[in-house]
Amino acid sequence: MTTETAEANTLLAEEDIARAAIYDLLAALLHRPPDAAALARIAALEPGEGEIGRAVKSLAGMARVMDPESIEREHTALFIGIGRGELVPYASYYRTGFLNEKPLADLRADMERLSISRAPGVMEPEDGIASLCEMMAGLILGRFGEPASLAVQNEFFRAHLAPWARHFFSDLEKASSAAFYAPVGTLGRAMMDVEEEMFRMIGEGEAIGPVAGSA
Amino acid sequence: MKQRRAEKREGATRRDFLRLAGTGAPVLAAMSLAGARVAEAGEAVKGHGIRVTEHMRKYYESLRF
Image (cartoon, rainbow over all chains, first blue to last red; front, side, top):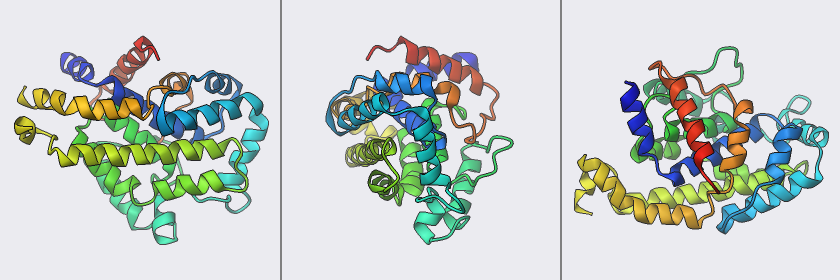
């Protein structure tokens, strides 16, 4: 088992680890506001190219000028609030107008199939944006068993993120309470675009799995 | 084995695309936030999940961006 696991890991491309890292970063920041140490590391990020690079640059810039206390207040205003926050970051809410609807039931079925379980003590529904980003990272890296194939990743992305996540991140970018979280929204939106495009590329080439032999 | 070769082939274009999109930079930040990771996505059922994560953490650390 150990050998197999190690071998599976060596097959991961650097670029897929980077994808997982972006999902992890989004998950961590959306789940809870960063502490001073995390903020210092985000401030020190050196942005790369493209849309993602630009978003990382704004995020790093924001991390340099903001303190953890104001970011925490912002996080509360955005996602928790009194009664509710400015945004309700759940798939069911975005797709049906209500929490705990069919998108959550569908997700639970897929989680079961993919051997993903809710950590003990967690109360909020699983279809929150932070959880979904964490699940994508986990599927890519193989945290729930073997790393998921691109076909499985695509299926999960298509079913649970594609229908609403871009819309959510774009709302986050424009939210009136968002300062630090505006570039988090930009990063998320850019990531959703990159993922859409990437999955389209492999779809066109029929390059997933054994059929790719003819590519 | 056949599948692995095929994935290598598709890899070139897809990976080039990801590189150009600038996906590399946040790796270090995500690594440093690993301790604050959301826990609710659950645990691996096969029992080797923790080992995989540790391995991945080393992998993260070995990367230079």
